[in-house]
Each structure stands twice: as structure tokens, then as C-alpha cells.
Amino acid sequence: MFIGIDIGTSAVKVVVISSEGRELASASSPLSLQTPRRNWCEQQPETWWEATLTACAELRSGKPDAWAAARAIGLSGQMHGAVMLGGELEVLRPAILWNDGRSMAQCKAMEARMPEIGSICGVPAMPGMTAPKILWMKENEPDTYSGIRHILLPKDFVRLRLTGELATDMADAAGTMWLDEANRAWSDSLCSVSATNPAWLPRLLEGPEISGQLSKEAASALGLPAGIPVAAGGGDASTGAMGIGAVHDGDAFISLGTSGQLFVCSSAFQPNAASAVHAFAHCVPGRWSVIAAMLNGASPMQWFAGVARTEIAELLKAAQSEDGRIPYFLPYLTGERTPHNDAEIRGGFLGLEPATSNAAMMHAVVDSIAYTFCDARDAIEAAGREITSPAAIGGGARSDFVLQTMSDALGIPISRYKGAETGPALGAARLGMIASGAATVAEAAVKPDVDRIFEPDLARADYHAERLDSWRKLYLALKDVRL
Image 1 (spheres, one colour):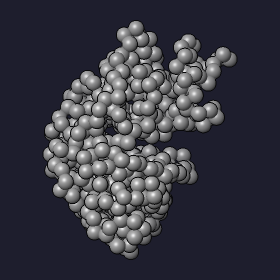
Image 2 (image 1 turned 90 degrees about the horizontal axis):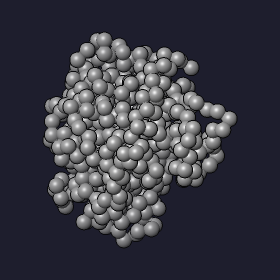
Image 3 (image 1 turned 90 degrees about the vertical axis):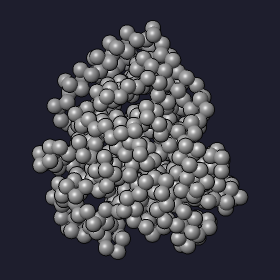
Image 4 (image 1 turned 120 degrees about the horizontal axis):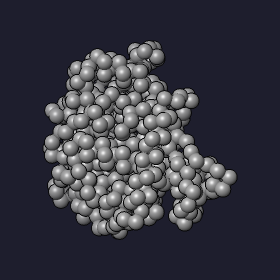
């Protein structure tokens, strides 16, 4: 048996899989966000460990035999977060997360000092990345900055609790802007331009490598044998890929979670900073990825359901039958990365009228999610990769209406795998399986069975083409309006 732990933004998810790679059980524990100022988004690192303990306790109670038979643990997590620790490994301040936009000025400064930055780290300077957050710390919280002795990514803080080791993997390191992607090594020049001491960074490992063993203290807390290996793991985009077997050149998928990604696996490093895509190391050796990353993913549906005080499923059902006089919605609740790299743009509805219903507004939200993936597809193609028939994973992929709308807007078939919502946690468990010696990458990276294929409705092509054109014009018209 193997355990996968995914440190998400809204929850920690833990899965147990069998020696054949089949999921036996899963559990999750919710997390909350703190947004003390505009463009700020933070979490307390200790809450990740507490949520991990809670989810693990549920699985231990529900599947005691399988839990006790665990042979390895793999880790996955939200990328780009800055966890700053002092000399005694104490947390210095709340972690600054991937969707935090406070460091836009620092990004511009980094680009000005190092114009070639995107060709080295695979992405233009973006405030969601880790490196500009540290430069922001130096300029805005100098006392805290002066106390930094270690910097970890979110899942690596949990690794520290599990093993006592300071380590990370190539795929998660790829999202820091400190990694020389082509050479899969920390870059002194990228550290220098972001006021980062290279000595603060953890050791680098490939995803399936063993990063440490479960300590006696952690084993006692989790009810597991001490000494079992903990794999290096990966950032959630790459472990999501591992979870659906996307490890071969050209394998592509759509991830619809809190954020959204359009991911293509590559056998080579293919940077194209001008298109605002992310060319990152994969969580398996000898592989990279080209990713269009959208900050808002499927989360606008959750947001609108909260505003409307109605369950998402109920709103989606009503929206599906609401097909006239649909307003427009810009889904940029927390800014946007691909293709705009704009931390300041915000969301909004346009075209509301007295007859506009909650169902029509949810329909507009779903359309907007599809259109962000049209932007993503175009950015990926500008980087030299073609998307023809991606798979879909993540919580948003559970909705037939959402995936059909995306297929219609993109004009391509989209496959939904069985159990696709598990995603990154499953991929993490598979990396644990490889680390233990129970399987090779090829043996572990098995594609799940297809649940359904959504074929584009050609009768909807003109409808979406017209709305997409108007929707794109809205961003251009409003991007300079700052609220």
C-alpha cells in the first residue's frame, strides 16, 4: 500500500492506493485562506500539518489494515508559496501563496535587471512565483527578511514535519523562478536578482527519489511504521499529470481545480516567455512541461454559488437550460497569469438586465471558464505545441455541463477519466510507489479508464466564436481600470 498527500489551497487530500496502483480510499480536510489586504493571499503553514493529521486519521480509522501496510509516502502540493523559516526552523510569518499579487513591482524590477530571465527559469517574472515574494520581503518587511535562513514550498513544510529533512523536487522548484530549468539545478544568477541567498534553498531531488524516512515522532502521530520512505514528490500540476499517466511527449490535460491549467508533457525544455506559458521541469526525470496557468480555474463557480446562496450543482443544472440573454463574466477574481500576467485586473459581469437570473449568471461564469482555456490553448500553440484531445481532471471536471461547454468552445474532444478528481494525490502516491522500488515510472504512470468523451457540438461553434471575441475585447477595454 502507498500513501499520497496533496497540500492543496482549499484542502489537504490523502489517498491510499494498492500495490497495483488502484485507489482504495481517500479523505480530505479543509483549509482557509487569509486575505488581509488587496492582492494578498496567505496561509499559516502549521494548518497544513494539522489538516494532514486530520485526513490521515480518517483513513487510518476507515481502512486500518491498508493504512498499517503502507510502504511509502509521496507528496504533492500547491506551487509557488513562500514558507520562510528561521535558524531554528521556526515559521517567521504566514506563507505567501501562489495567487498572491503583491509583488508586481518586484517582477518588473527583476525583468529590467535580467531581460533573459524567462529563457532560464521558463516563465516571465510573475507575482505568483516564489522569487519576487522574497524581493518584496526585503523591501517591505526587512526585519523578517533578515531572519530568513530557509525557504520551503508548502508541501516541503509538511515533508519537514514528516522526516526532518529540508528538500524539494524539480517540478515544484520549477515554479520558484530560482531553477535553471534546462540543467535542473538552482541558479545563482536567478537567486541574485531576487535578493535570495542560495544557501536558504533546500536540496533538489527528482520526484521519485527518496527525500527521507518517516521520523518516529511523525510515525506516532500518523499511526504508521517509522522509517518508511517519503518520495520527493512534485508540484500539483506535475503530480496531477502523473496521476493520469501524462509522462510522454505530447500527453495533455486540463486541470480544473481552484486554479486552472492546460498542461502538455514535453521531452525537452521549451521556454516561450512571450506567451506567458510556464515551461517547467516535470516530476519524473528527463521530462518537462508546457503549462498555461490560470489563477481562477473553476473557483468562480464556488464564488458565485456563495454569492447566490445556492448549491453549485443546483445552479449548474439551472444554467444548462438557460440559453438566452446570457451576460458576460470576466473571471479574474484574483488577477490572471496566462496570457495576461496581470495581478491587478478583477472580475465582473457585463450585460446585466432586469430579466437576468442566477442561472443566466452561472451560465456566464461557465462560459468564461471555457474562454480562459481558449486563451490558454492559443498561448500553448504560440509556444509551439498543439492541443488536440486533452483529458480533464480536478473537481470542476465532475460537471458534464462545464466539460461540454469547454469542448464546444475549444472545438476539440475532451476525455474525462474515472476518478479524475483525485489527481495530484494519486500521482504523489505513485511517486511513493516508485521510490519504494515497487514499480518503474512506466509501470506506475498508467492512464485511468475513460469515463466519458465530450465531443464538440458544431452547432455551437458560431455562438462561442462570437461571444469569445466580445469577451476578449472586455479585458482589453477594462485592463487599465484599477479599482
